[in-house]
Length: 268
Ligand code: ADP
Ligand code: MG
Image 1: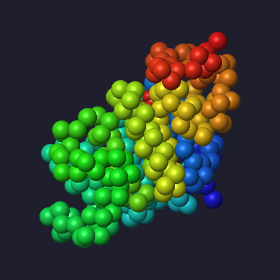
Image 2 (image 1 turned 30 degrees about the vertical axis):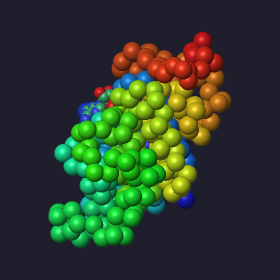
Image 3 (image 1 turned 60 degrees about the horizontal axis):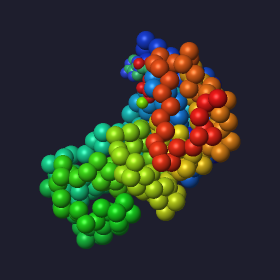
Image 4 (image 1 turned 180 degrees about the horizontal axis):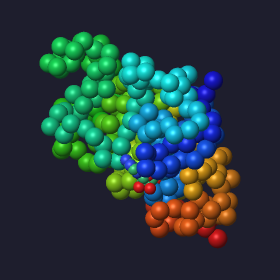
């Protein structure tokens, strides 16, 4: 069974259907990106996988759990298996790198030792491993507000890994970063994907990065999937269809981040 399975799935808000009747099957260990213009529903879809946006029709099955009938207790268990990374990092800025990463372990630690931030030597070892995976071990005791954007995002990835998740959902994880930091963040996600077999689904604004890092791309427009396949088979006509203005709320905004931009992906 796939890690994420959607059948005729409609997602959205009380006032509005955003994702309309899609079918999708994502297997364990995939590294996949969702692309499309602003307002098309990338975040709505991604956060649907975490049961944050509402199912308005069809079926959604995450890690073998049917989100349509899920109860609160099951939801807590499921969410512990899903790490989430945001554009704005969502770290506790006055805490150290080490404490932020350790907070990913909260769901499997006794409450008291979490509150007083007491870690066993085994937990220290584990946190150190994650720091090395994301390349932040030199900053272990630095407060997070002293770090650069790229470093903060790598701490957020380490915190997500510390959950020992089966899936990581990353909503525009590189949008606020310069190209060098963006690249290091995507390499870090790829590393986590390969080392731990974590399924990674990421919303990416930049097609060129999706092309370089992801094995599969989902293109959204008009609430539907208009492309699902390897990035190297995305034709200019399909790219044009994905970013077609008439089907979206906002202006189309393909964002290439030179120097990795590929002219062959520009719409005809
Ligand atoms: P994207 O991530 O592709 O930019 P979103 O998923 O954020 O798109 O938004 C898709 C649509 O859903 C937009 O029209 C947006 O205005 C609407 N939307 C997003 N969040 C909410 C919400 N909490 N309540 C109602 N509508 C929302
Ligand atoms: Mg979004």
